[in-house]
Image (tube, rainbow over all chains, first blue to last red; front, top):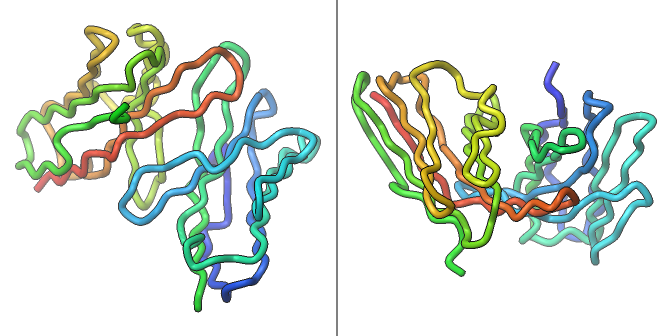
Length: 111
Length: 115
């Protein structure tokens, strides 16, 4: 079983829609969590960190449920420029900076 | 800063040849990572260095792969001999890790094709 699992999609949504991505992780010792964004044929870039209390950055909201080992990303009012692959990432336990990436969820926002 | 710099951007080589991928991390960063990305397996961590010392190389597929970091500003990933199944995009990333939520910055990647 892969340590970080995501629905690969693709998610095809119209502009202005709200879309949610889910992710589960298997390593209960994971300390930190992130969402990265990867555009086609480009490198991954950090979108946002995910905190236990949940956090919001503009149209993006990330949630963490440690009990269920579940992470989510909500995008409101989707823009064409949001089209990309969204990677869920977990960092291993204390003393380690090993980042484990999910395979990503592809989002296409349609005019 | 120019960011993480990888070279070459594209590499096409014949099976059995040696391939060397290069990475220059962001100045001042103390951690460096090599990842491999394929459609089938996604992003896989191959090896990571902290303060130029290899910390975890359990992701290195086999003895054909080796990585070095002779100083804080340069790292190489070598494949010898290369095989068609090594075809992938290889990313180098760096960060300044202090133990918390630290961003990893990726280079633009090297797209390797082994024919």
